[in-house]
Amino acid sequence: MTHGPKAALRRKLPVNLRPEDLWLFEYAPEYETPPAGPIEIENVRASADGLLFKGGRILPESFVVPANLEQWKKRSVVKFLASNYLLRKRRRLASPAAWVIDDWSGGYYHWFADTLPRLYTIRDRIPELVLLFPHRYEKLGFARRSLEAFGVKKLEFIKQGEVVLCQKLVVPAHTAHTGNHDDEVLRGVRDILVRAFGKQEAGAPERVYISRGKAPIRRVKNEEEVLRVLREFDFEVFHFEDYTFEEQVKIAANARHLVSSHGAGLTNMLFMSPGRSVMELRNRTDAIDNCYFTMASALNLNYYYQACEPENSEEDPHSANLLVDAEALKENLSLMLGS
Image 1 (cartoon, rainbow, N blue to C red):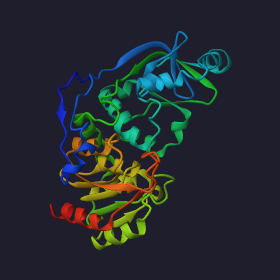
Image 2: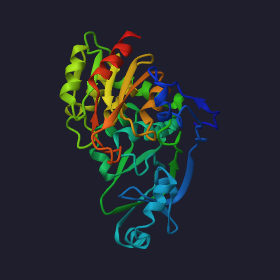
Image 3: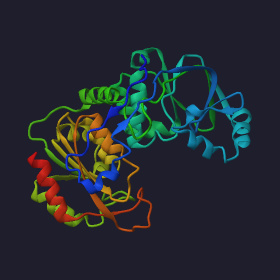
Protein backbone atom coordinates (compact mmCIF):
# COMPACT_ATOMS: atom_id res chain seq x y z
CA MET A 1 0.00 0.00 0.00
CA THR A 2 1.62 3.27 -1.08
CA HIS A 3 0.77 6.93 -1.01
CA GLY A 4 1.77 9.16 -3.89
CA PRO A 5 2.75 12.83 -3.84
CA LYS A 6 0.19 15.14 -2.31
CA ALA A 7 -0.60 18.78 -2.80
CA ALA A 8 0.21 21.33 -0.14
CA LEU A 9 -2.15 21.09 2.83
CA ARG A 10 -3.19 24.16 4.78
CA ARG A 11 -3.00 24.07 8.54
CA LYS A 12 -5.82 25.35 10.73
CA LEU A 13 -4.48 28.32 12.66
CA PRO A 14 -4.86 28.44 16.46
CA VAL A 15 -8.34 29.38 17.59
CA ASN A 16 -6.98 32.05 19.95
CA LEU A 17 -4.23 33.37 17.67
CA ARG A 18 -3.00 36.84 18.60
CA PRO A 19 -1.72 38.89 15.63
CA GLU A 20 1.56 39.57 17.43
CA ASP A 21 2.15 35.80 17.75
CA LEU A 22 1.65 34.95 14.08
CA TRP A 23 5.44 34.64 13.64
CA LEU A 24 5.38 31.59 15.94
CA PHE A 25 3.35 29.67 13.36
CA GLU A 26 4.36 31.24 10.04
CA TYR A 27 6.41 28.33 8.75
CA ALA A 28 3.75 25.73 9.55
CA PRO A 29 0.37 26.67 7.99
CA GLU A 30 1.22 25.02 4.66
CA TYR A 31 3.34 21.97 3.95
CA GLU A 32 3.79 19.23 1.40
CA THR A 33 3.88 15.58 2.35
CA PRO A 34 6.64 13.69 0.56
CA PRO A 35 5.91 10.72 -1.69
CA ALA A 36 5.57 7.69 0.58
CA GLY A 37 6.24 4.19 -0.63
CA PRO A 38 8.23 1.25 0.73
CA ILE A 39 11.58 0.25 -0.71
CA GLU A 40 12.95 -3.27 -0.56
CA ILE A 41 16.63 -3.85 0.20
CA GLU A 42 18.33 -7.22 -0.23
CA ASN A 43 21.19 -8.58 1.86
CA VAL A 44 21.32 -5.65 4.25
CA ARG A 45 22.69 -5.78 7.79
CA ALA A 46 21.02 -4.28 10.87
CA SER A 47 23.02 -3.50 14.00
CA ALA A 48 21.96 -3.72 17.63
CA ASP A 49 22.16 0.06 17.89
CA GLY A 50 19.69 0.60 15.07
CA LEU A 51 21.80 1.23 11.98
CA LEU A 52 21.36 -0.33 8.55
CA PHE A 53 24.49 -0.90 6.50
CA LYS A 54 25.45 -2.63 3.29
CA GLY A 55 28.61 -2.85 1.23
CA GLY A 56 30.63 -0.87 3.74
CA ARG A 57 28.12 2.02 3.76
CA ILE A 58 25.73 3.28 6.43
CA LEU A 59 22.32 3.64 4.81
CA PRO A 60 20.47 6.97 5.10
CA GLU A 61 17.29 5.05 5.95
CA SER A 62 18.78 4.67 9.44
CA PHE A 63 18.14 8.35 10.20
CA VAL A 64 15.15 10.63 10.50
CA VAL A 65 16.86 13.45 8.56
CA PRO A 66 20.02 13.56 6.39
CA ALA A 67 21.69 15.98 8.82
CA ASN A 68 21.71 13.26 11.48
CA LEU A 69 23.63 10.96 9.14
CA GLU A 70 26.20 13.67 8.48
CA GLN A 71 26.54 14.28 12.20
CA TRP A 72 26.95 10.56 12.84
CA LYS A 73 29.68 10.34 10.20
CA LYS A 74 31.84 12.57 12.38
CA ARG A 75 32.28 9.54 14.61
CA SER A 76 34.54 6.63 13.64
CA VAL A 77 32.71 5.01 10.72
CA VAL A 78 35.64 2.65 10.15
CA LYS A 79 35.52 1.46 13.75
CA PHE A 80 31.75 0.88 13.53
CA LEU A 81 32.00 -1.11 10.30
CA ALA A 82 34.95 -3.15 11.51
CA SER A 83 33.14 -4.01 14.73
CA ASN A 84 29.87 -4.93 13.02
CA TYR A 85 31.42 -6.88 10.12
CA LEU A 86 34.13 -8.69 12.05
CA LEU A 87 33.54 -8.77 15.80
CA ARG A 88 29.84 -9.02 16.44
CA LYS A 89 27.88 -12.24 16.30
CA ARG A 90 26.02 -12.60 13.01
CA ARG A 91 22.55 -14.03 12.56
CA ARG A 92 20.82 -14.60 9.22
CA LEU A 93 17.12 -13.81 8.94
CA ALA A 94 15.61 -15.82 6.11
CA SER A 95 12.05 -14.49 6.47
CA PRO A 96 11.17 -11.17 4.80
CA ALA A 97 11.38 -8.41 7.40
CA ALA A 98 10.31 -4.79 7.84
CA TRP A 99 12.20 -1.85 9.34
CA VAL A 100 10.02 1.10 10.39
CA ILE A 101 12.31 3.00 12.76
CA ASP A 102 15.00 5.69 12.62
CA ASP A 103 17.38 7.17 15.18
CA TRP A 104 14.59 9.15 16.91
CA SER A 105 11.92 6.44 17.04
CA GLY A 106 12.47 5.56 20.70
CA GLY A 107 10.91 8.85 21.82
CA TYR A 108 7.21 8.83 22.65
CA TYR A 109 6.22 11.54 20.18
CA HIS A 110 8.36 10.17 17.34
CA TRP A 111 7.05 6.64 17.84
CA PHE A 112 3.46 7.72 17.32
CA ALA A 113 3.98 10.59 14.89
CA ASP A 114 6.71 9.14 12.66
CA THR A 115 7.09 5.39 13.22
CA LEU A 116 3.54 4.05 13.43
CA PRO A 117 2.48 6.06 10.36
CA ARG A 118 5.19 4.21 8.41
CA LEU A 119 3.82 0.90 9.70
CA TYR A 120 0.31 2.02 8.77
CA THR A 121 1.33 2.35 5.10
CA ILE A 122 2.31 -1.34 4.98
CA ARG A 123 -0.39 -2.63 7.34
CA ASP A 124 -1.73 -5.03 4.72
CA ARG A 125 1.69 -6.75 4.65
CA ILE A 126 2.05 -7.18 8.41
CA PRO A 127 1.08 -10.90 8.41
CA GLU A 128 3.90 -11.78 6.01
CA LEU A 129 6.70 -9.68 7.56
CA VAL A 130 8.87 -9.98 10.64
CA LEU A 131 9.18 -6.57 12.33
CA LEU A 132 12.79 -6.09 13.35
CA PHE A 133 13.93 -3.77 16.15
CA PRO A 134 17.09 -3.12 18.18
CA HIS A 135 17.01 -4.69 21.65
CA ARG A 136 16.21 -1.43 23.48
CA TYR A 137 12.69 -1.40 22.01
CA GLU A 138 11.86 -4.59 23.86
CA LYS A 139 11.52 -2.56 27.08
CA LEU A 140 9.31 0.17 25.62
CA GLY A 141 5.86 -0.81 26.83
CA PHE A 142 4.04 1.75 24.67
CA ALA A 143 5.80 0.36 21.59
CA ARG A 144 4.96 -3.27 22.32
CA ARG A 145 1.31 -2.55 23.13
CA SER A 146 0.73 -0.31 20.12
CA LEU A 147 2.22 -2.96 17.84
CA GLU A 148 -0.27 -5.45 19.26
CA ALA A 149 -3.08 -3.08 18.25
CA PHE A 150 -1.76 -3.27 14.68
CA GLY A 151 -1.94 -7.06 14.82
CA VAL A 152 1.83 -7.59 14.78
CA LYS A 153 2.61 -11.20 15.65
CA LYS A 154 6.08 -11.65 14.12
CA LEU A 155 8.46 -9.54 16.16
CA GLU A 156 12.22 -9.96 16.62
CA PHE A 157 14.83 -7.96 18.51
CA ILE A 158 18.49 -7.61 17.63
CA LYS A 159 20.44 -8.61 20.72
CA GLN A 160 23.25 -6.52 22.10
CA GLY A 161 26.49 -7.48 20.35
CA GLU A 162 24.60 -9.00 17.42
CA VAL A 163 24.21 -8.15 13.74
CA VAL A 164 21.26 -9.47 11.72
CA LEU A 165 21.66 -10.12 8.00
CA CYS A 166 18.32 -9.65 6.24
CA GLN A 167 17.85 -11.30 2.88
CA LYS A 168 14.91 -9.02 2.19
CA LEU A 169 14.08 -5.89 4.18
CA VAL A 170 11.01 -3.72 3.52
CA VAL A 171 11.56 -0.10 4.56
CA PRO A 172 8.51 2.18 4.30
CA ALA A 173 9.29 5.85 3.76
CA HIS A 174 8.38 8.53 6.25
CA THR A 175 4.88 9.77 5.48
CA ALA A 176 5.83 13.40 6.24
CA HIS A 177 8.85 15.36 7.34
CA THR A 178 9.20 14.97 11.10
CA GLY A 179 7.15 17.62 12.89
CA ASN A 180 4.53 17.47 10.13
CA HIS A 181 1.95 14.82 9.40
CA ASP A 182 0.04 13.15 6.63
CA ASP A 183 -3.47 13.88 7.91
CA GLU A 184 -5.12 10.78 6.48
CA VAL A 185 -2.42 8.43 7.73
CA LEU A 186 -2.27 9.94 11.23
CA ARG A 187 -6.03 9.67 11.57
CA GLY A 188 -5.79 6.04 10.50
CA VAL A 189 -3.22 5.39 13.23
CA ARG A 190 -5.53 7.07 15.75
CA ASP A 191 -8.47 4.91 14.74
CA ILE A 192 -6.51 1.68 15.20
CA LEU A 193 -5.21 2.62 18.65
CA VAL A 194 -8.47 4.07 19.94
CA ARG A 195 -10.38 0.98 18.83
CA ALA A 196 -7.92 -1.14 20.79
CA PHE A 197 -7.54 0.91 23.97
CA GLY A 198 -9.78 4.00 23.98
CA LYS A 199 -13.04 2.69 25.40
CA GLN A 200 -15.50 5.51 26.13
CA GLU A 201 -16.51 5.52 29.78
CA ALA A 202 -19.34 7.41 31.45
CA GLY A 203 -18.06 9.70 34.18
CA ALA A 204 -14.48 9.81 32.88
CA PRO A 205 -12.70 13.19 33.29
CA GLU A 206 -13.53 15.54 30.44
CA ARG A 207 -11.03 18.25 31.43
CA VAL A 208 -7.49 16.92 31.70
CA TYR A 209 -4.20 18.58 32.57
CA ILE A 210 -1.04 16.53 31.94
CA SER A 211 1.68 17.74 34.27
CA ARG A 212 5.42 17.66 33.50
CA GLY A 213 6.17 18.13 37.20
CA LYS A 214 8.16 14.89 37.29
CA ALA A 215 10.03 15.54 34.04
CA PRO A 216 13.70 16.60 34.07
CA ILE A 217 13.21 19.48 31.62
CA ARG A 218 10.53 21.90 30.35
CA ARG A 219 8.64 21.97 33.65
CA VAL A 220 6.18 24.71 34.56
CA LYS A 221 8.15 26.57 37.20
CA ASN A 222 5.09 28.12 38.86
CA GLU A 223 2.94 25.01 38.52
CA GLU A 224 1.26 25.36 41.93
CA GLU A 225 -0.20 28.68 40.78
CA VAL A 226 -1.20 27.11 37.46
CA LEU A 227 -2.88 24.17 39.22
CA ARG A 228 -5.00 26.53 41.32
CA VAL A 229 -6.30 28.12 38.12
CA LEU A 230 -6.94 24.79 36.43
CA ARG A 231 -8.86 23.49 39.42
CA GLU A 232 -11.07 26.58 39.31
CA PHE A 233 -12.07 25.32 35.86
CA ASP A 234 -12.57 21.73 37.09
CA PHE A 235 -9.52 20.24 35.41
CA GLU A 236 -8.12 17.00 36.81
CA VAL A 237 -4.35 16.68 37.07
CA PHE A 238 -2.45 13.65 35.77
CA HIS A 239 1.21 12.64 35.77
CA PHE A 240 1.22 10.20 32.88
CA GLU A 241 4.44 8.59 34.10
CA ASP A 242 2.23 6.93 36.72
CA TYR A 243 -0.12 5.33 34.16
CA THR A 244 0.18 2.47 31.73
CA PHE A 245 0.01 3.16 28.03
CA GLU A 246 -3.50 1.73 27.85
CA GLU A 247 -4.63 3.99 30.69
CA GLN A 248 -3.14 7.05 28.98
CA VAL A 249 -5.03 6.25 25.78
CA LYS A 250 -8.29 5.84 27.68
CA ILE A 251 -7.87 9.10 29.61
CA ALA A 252 -7.11 11.10 26.46
CA ALA A 253 -9.82 9.39 24.41
CA ASN A 254 -12.43 10.43 26.97
CA ALA A 255 -11.16 13.99 27.37
CA ARG A 256 -12.96 16.90 25.74
CA HIS A 257 -10.33 19.46 26.74
CA LEU A 258 -6.63 18.68 27.18
CA VAL A 259 -3.99 21.09 28.51
CA SER A 260 -0.25 20.52 28.86
CA SER A 261 3.10 22.14 28.29
CA HIS A 262 5.19 21.22 25.25
CA GLY A 263 6.34 17.62 25.67
CA ALA A 264 5.53 13.95 25.27
CA GLY A 265 2.27 14.16 27.22
CA LEU A 266 0.72 16.31 24.49
CA THR A 267 1.27 13.46 22.04
CA ASN A 268 -1.74 11.83 23.68
CA MET A 269 -3.97 14.26 21.82
CA LEU A 270 -3.64 11.57 19.15
CA PHE A 271 -6.36 9.63 20.97
CA MET A 272 -8.90 12.46 21.25
CA SER A 273 -12.03 12.61 19.12
CA PRO A 274 -12.21 15.14 16.25
CA GLY A 275 -13.65 18.52 17.23
CA ARG A 276 -12.31 18.45 20.78
CA SER A 277 -9.83 20.98 22.15
CA VAL A 278 -6.18 21.02 23.18
CA MET A 279 -4.10 23.83 24.68
CA GLU A 280 -0.30 23.92 24.52
CA LEU A 281 1.73 25.94 27.03
CA ARG A 282 4.72 26.80 24.86
CA ASN A 283 7.92 28.80 24.98
CA ARG A 284 7.32 32.22 23.44
CA THR A 285 10.82 32.25 21.96
CA ASP A 286 10.39 29.01 19.98
CA ALA A 287 8.97 29.39 16.47
CA ILE A 288 10.61 26.19 15.21
CA ASP A 289 9.02 23.29 17.08
CA ASN A 290 5.37 23.35 16.01
CA CYS A 291 4.84 19.59 16.03
CA TYR A 292 1.85 19.70 18.40
CA PHE A 293 0.21 22.54 16.52
CA THR A 294 0.52 20.56 13.28
CA MET A 295 -0.65 17.36 14.98
CA ALA A 296 -3.78 19.06 16.28
CA SER A 297 -4.56 20.36 12.81
CA ALA A 298 -4.05 16.93 11.25
CA LEU A 299 -6.41 15.37 13.79
CA ASN A 300 -9.07 18.07 13.34
CA LEU A 301 -8.74 19.26 16.93
CA ASN A 302 -9.25 22.84 18.07
CA TYR A 303 -5.77 24.11 18.95
CA TYR A 304 -5.23 26.78 21.58
CA TYR A 305 -1.90 27.98 22.89
CA GLN A 306 -0.38 30.22 25.52
CA ALA A 307 3.01 31.75 24.80
CA CYS A 308 4.97 31.61 28.05
CA GLU A 309 8.16 33.25 29.26
CA PRO A 310 11.14 30.92 29.71
CA GLU A 311 12.59 30.81 33.21
CA ASN A 312 16.01 31.44 31.64
CA SER A 313 15.92 33.39 28.38
CA GLU A 314 19.42 32.19 27.43
CA GLU A 315 18.56 28.49 27.75
CA ASP A 316 17.69 26.30 24.76
CA PRO A 317 13.87 26.33 24.34
CA HIS A 318 13.98 22.53 24.14
CA SER A 319 14.99 22.33 27.80
CA ALA A 320 13.94 25.64 29.41
CA ASN A 321 11.33 25.68 32.17
CA LEU A 322 8.29 27.91 31.64
CA LEU A 323 6.62 30.65 33.64
CA VAL A 324 2.87 30.70 32.97
CA ASP A 325 0.90 33.93 33.37
CA ALA A 326 -2.05 32.86 35.54
CA GLU A 327 -4.38 35.67 34.44
CA ALA A 328 -3.72 34.97 30.77
CA LEU A 329 -4.36 31.28 31.46
CA LYS A 330 -7.77 32.12 32.91
CA GLU A 331 -8.64 34.05 29.76
CA ASN A 332 -7.49 31.27 27.46
CA LEU A 333 -9.31 28.56 29.44
CA SER A 334 -12.50 30.63 29.41
CA LEU A 335 -12.22 30.96 25.66
CA MET A 336 -11.51 27.26 25.12
CA LEU A 337 -14.31 26.05 27.38
CA GLY A 338 -16.82 28.57 26.04
CA SER A 339 -16.27 27.84 22.36
